[in-house]
Amino acid sequence: MAVRVQTQDFDIAAEIATLTAGRIDIGALVTFTGVVRGSTSGRSLVSMTLEHYPGMTEAELEGIEAEARARWPLQASLIVHRIGELTPGANIVLVVTASPHRHAAFQAAEFLMDYLKSRAPFWKKETYSGGEAAWVDARQADDAALRRWTTSQD
Image (cartoon, rainbow, N blue to C red; front, side, top):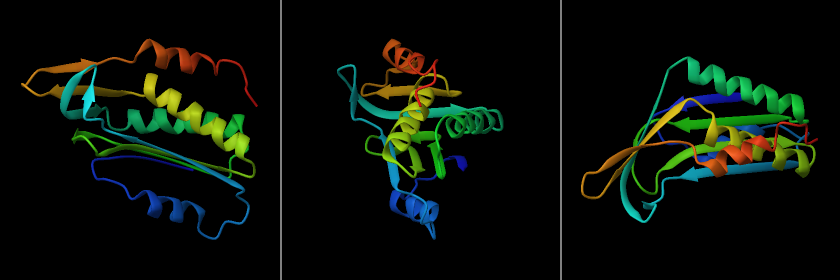
């Protein structure tokens, strides 16, 4: 089980290969990759800047990953989240969950992404064409998605 917060890009195939090397106990592997869009709210996006509090962020992500492992039978999992200034088309986040069965892998991946979108301690600023910039809060839809996990789903 692993959590990384980094500025550099990640290679999805290499991350999966490392996570699954030599494993024959995995029957399902679910991946989610978040990518910077070129527009948001009808405006052209130039860049997105992600900031975090080193140490605290990793500890929070490790805690939510431990919760996912407690809820579902995961053989392995990985969260890689980038920080710094990212441009449209750049990878932002990779979540990988591995389990003997697909149901657990899918649910664990959704749970982790719902947490990352609404509660993870990252601060996101979007810069639009024309120079306007704005800090972005979690959307109500993201908060609602996280609330569905308040009772056990296994």
